[in-house]
Image (cartoon, rainbow, N blue to C red; front, side):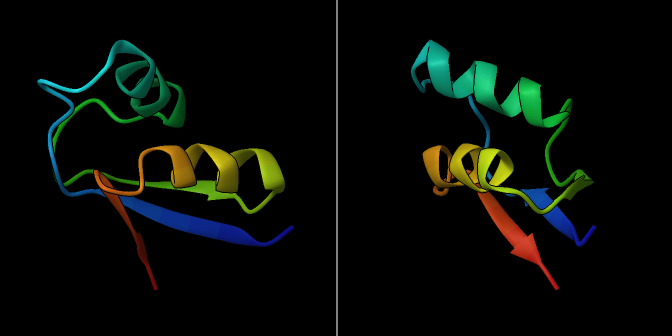
Length: 58
């Protein structure tokens, strides 16, 4: 399967709890961390939910 690299560029502090849980579910534990996930609709939906906190790394 295709992989997608996601980087957390902003903190989850002062954001709703559901967005913090989404960051944790994506595997983020610190700022500027890059995680690699399989590219599927579920992961894309999670990225879309926190699009203002993360970026896709090419």
